[in-house]
Length: 371
Length: 218
Image 1 (tube, rainbow over the protein chains, first blue to last red):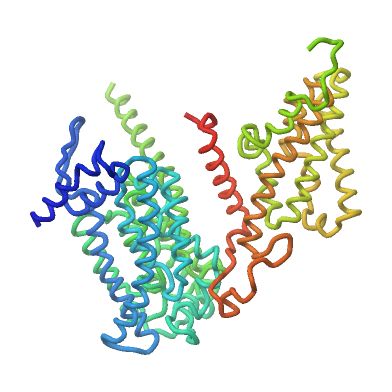
Image 2: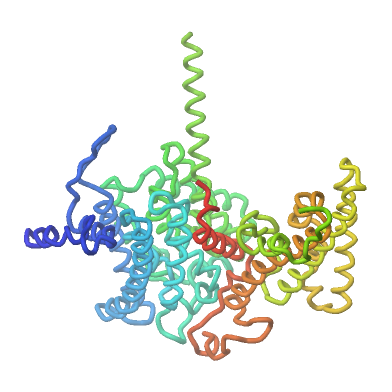
């Protein structure tokens, strides 16, 4: 370890101001802080620090994603009729290129922008780069993933000013782009299988047409159903959720209220129940499709979600409720989680604004009473 | 300029009226006018070209007519006079399109009629023609119409190429490339939707401003 430190220190002057490769300063900085916690201290202003800087935070999210990712790889094999290690290996080889493409394209653009603008490389893409392949069907052509990633990084993040400034969740924006640009490759019955010639509807598509699904609820919970790479297993996602909540990285307020919102909307549809899709048990919505994945990993995104605690309850609740509403009411989209999260991303600043305004009004009132 | 001396028709000053809208005074990407129609008619190249020419004709002649009338109109009723002139010209253009290029006129549908409401035309009449001589106004109208058209054609080029794989209706990307025919390629469906046109406009503005640093907002 100290050898690596010495090496980094040795080559540092080359990249610093005045050095030969000083134009690559932010690239060097990105790798150095990736390897070692930076030893700089904040100089002014009130600040609270702990050892968990942004890079370390992002790594925890990546670790929380791993159960769902590994299960997704395994399930890719299972869906084409394999089992055991063979299934995992098959899925691994299918999913790995997607991950590599997403990271290479996304980080390439991030580094290029950081270099051109002369600021540090942002860490946010460590997570986005893994999320993007996980919300795509396994048969998505790699160039589509590349294009979606490029679109999301440039128009979702860089035009707003990089990580921390983005209005929309970049990974979902990538999915939304590919979904609307190349609809035939993102929906239907064939895209969920890694080999040609196989087809099968997802649980959501079956539910939306008949209100019944051919998979058992246990299979849906464990994840042995067709779907995007990372979204199928509610169990693996819950393991990730425990990691995120235990380390305090994701907000439990958002997460819980998304599930509550989804349940409430499901129960409401049960009560009015005009067609078969309205009648399915409310809890069934939570284990099929991307609901759990979106609730745990995407709605809780600290940048695009609400910042105030009350706002988190409101945004979370509406995210869940709107997702179920799109699923049931809109026949064109069997899955509503993506659209609902993106929609609430856009509304989150407004919700925050009203929460803050209300707080100000409440405290002003208190001053008046005291007089 | 003295009164005895006649200004040449294509003097440097007049040429500037013609060329400025292509550069730092473009109506679409600098003044942000006429965005609506540049989203609506740019799915294919052919309607975009026809639209660009129609707008150019209307802008040029409404500028010319208003510039000729500018001393005789009380300023209180100038807007209604402008509207009459522009509407008459648009109806003329509409009839000509229907007579000679009926299929394109069908594709453009209401957007030919909506040229009346295109901000560029009213804007140029108000800002330029009412205070300048007829010839200069005419050139300004042509310049602005073509400046608008240049952006329209650029957007339509990108949208038709990536969204339909063709240009002016001719197939550019071979059929055998498509996924449905066993290839690897697929048209970008998003290009057929207006939101993508807005993003393309944004990109053109981005490129334009990075070359013209004085246009960048502080």
